Amino acid sequence: MSSVNPRDYLEIDRLLTDEERLIKETVSRYVNEKYLPGVAEHFENGTFDTAVPKALGDLNVLGMHLKGYGCAGTSAVAYGVACLELEAGDSALRSFCSVQGSLAMFAIWKWGSEEQKQRWLPGMAAGDLIGCFGLTEPDSGSDPGSMRTTAKKDGEDWILNGSKMWITSGSIADVAVVWAKTDDGVQGFLVEPGMKGFTAPEMHHKLSLRASVTSELAFDDVRIPDANRLPEVQSLKGPLSCLNEARYGIVWGVVGAARSCFEAALDYAMTRKQFDEPIASFQLTQAKLADMATKVQQGYLLALRLGQLKDEGRIEPEHISMGKRANARMALDVARTARGILGANGITLEYPVLRHANNLESVFTYEGTDEIHTLSIGMALTGIPAFR
Image (cartoon, rainbow, N blue to C red; front, side, top):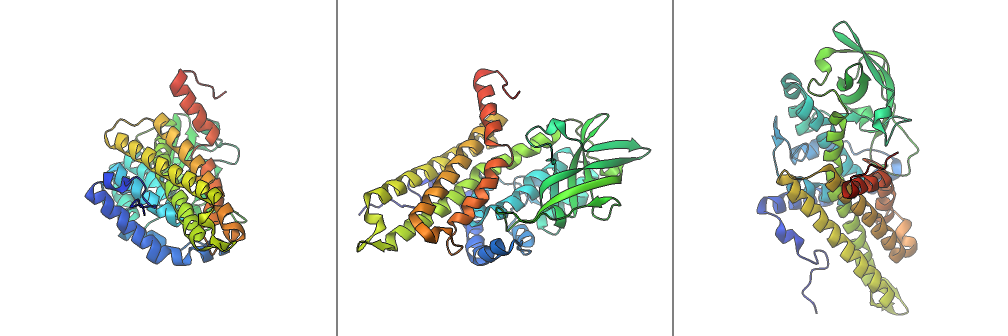
């Protein structure tokens, strides 16, 4: 018998540092022992596990790649492997961590005032405060420059009008980082619950990311003090820099979802018998398993290389586009193949496969569609923008 480990075929874990492996194992233990036992019920009921924010805060993974203000200040690779293990549980779990740390916290950390950082970041890192990030609108997704949300200066305040859509954690957030057009360019504002004219109704009837809170944000003449404006950016550079952080986490996260599907298919194939033999003994099943194992390992290596580039300060948005595009495609393909191996059992919540596949349909689209990332790569290769 071969000594190859089917679950780490190329021994990629050995390329991690001791600290990174410890973080990976710690997050994996939480996911397996605390999160997975209840995720099927939350997915089926469309509810969010309210223990998640504090649990992730206790694990020090919220904003873990940021420095100071209660954040762990880890390597980009360490953050990546944490995302991998979180999404092996469910995309909703990694999505909460990503929105909290890479979008809301990063926006404040990168573009906020010192007072804003001191006020919000320690509590958010601990999981005591929840943040969300408002950029996407009902009629503005891939083209954020066409946003209709506006903020007009009125004395020492700003008057915010408009709406945002598909906002993770919006209905439970203690602070919403909202991007709006102003006379001076696109600016970010920290909108708090209770501000008159601000509502955040939860969105229902989702068939994907059901274990996550998804909301609309609506602003009707919301008066916001200038102290709640992020002072260090007045352009789309602000929100786009945050999106790059979140996309990087997705590159890793979807590898976890794909690995979970592959492992479920492998385990099932070894025990499910047809024609008096385990289906793992059939050539067509082995071919599928071989393809899935290869794709998961390739995705892991791609994510690791991007993590190395990020830790070296050499990563570009176009690098992240290649990772997000390739790994989201890979994960969906693996999930669908795994569903086929499980047959009818693959559509039940007893197994994680179709839950992951449904979630990945959202991940495939958000933080930049497959088409947008394709064109980003094409522009990097040719120097010619083809977005219009």
